[in-house]
Image (cartoon, rainbow, N blue to C red; front, side, top):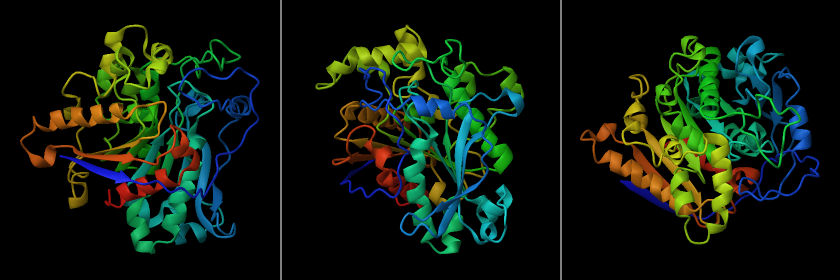
Amino acid sequence: MIINNVLWLTILSLGTVPVQAQSKQKPLSTPDRNNNNNNNNQMADYNRPSSGGWKPVLDPTDNKTIIGHHWRRHDYVPGEEALALQTLDMWIPISPAALSWGKPTPNTLLGDGAKAPWLIYIHGGAWRDPAIDSSSFDASATKILSDLAQQPLEQRKKTVAGIASINYRLSPHPNHPSSDPYDPNRTAKHPDHVADVLTALGFLKNYFGMKEYVLAGHSCGATLALQACMSPERWGLAGTAEWRAGWYNVAKPKAVVGFNGLYDLAGFIADPPKGYERWKEAYREFVVGAFGKKEEDWKKVCPGSIAEGWVREWNLTQQQQQGEEWKKRKVVLVQSLEDSLVPVEQTEGMAEYLERENQKVADEDKKVEVVVLREEKGGDHDEVWKKGERLGEILLGVLNGEI
């Protein structure tokens, strides 16, 4: 059964995405950005090694109280093989163990909360926009850490062990060309994007002991989150060197949360909903860039149009199935009704697909719980992550079992 909630959006930003110099490149004509072409400084940062270490995150209301620790752009591919975009940002909620040590380490930061689920976020940007990266989750992470800091310690330890925001290799962008036409960070094709997401999840499992997690994504990040629930064999990743090394060997998420997601690209391009016709060719351009020219290939990769049965590949381990609050898999689909780039039909079609799959399952515990949040005052496409508070609020609600 689909659970419908109509929520009104009130946003008070507790953190900000860093402001960068404006690019002199021409404005985008595509729906993956709203004329925010702050590319130059962002890409310069990618050339730096991820050696910053853990830095304290301060309470935005007083700038004196530490509410967590943050590591920006940590490599998730081992050794010299890591590319500049194969990094992630990590945040760890504050704990007495972390405060008692002069130099934070993963063990002291996680402390007794190591058994709690992680929260993982995948940014959007039409698989290609270099102006959107892991830092787009800064405001939401600050909101979450701030709210967690107000909870009693025992409740906090059960809510979330850590937070991560994943970077991944990007497809070429005609309006943001790379200085190196052969740069592997900027010439990705499917399944490179989902392979990077799976590799990052494997890193968190192997190096931070992540066992359970909620996987969230915005726009194409929502697509990637649902793709990560499927078998890596579907993407032709079985038998690769990375497969043999165990990079993709990670448990599936207990819940997926998609914000303004792209779920049926072929359907949109074939028949855009009323009011979105102007984006048809722009969609076609970035879909071809990420997945190639064949429409049948688009249908094979999108969770809302893919061959039936992929939900059965989303299996939880016995350990994950323990506990009444996580007995079933859950998909939370969040859609702003003010989104000028992605129509609500994308969310509704995804929910209908999941309900059709549920009808084939006799065991209620093996069905996927589907929650649809239609945000009447949700703002335009990118506002949910730019301001951050509502995104963080929803994700905390999922972690706490309130959504």
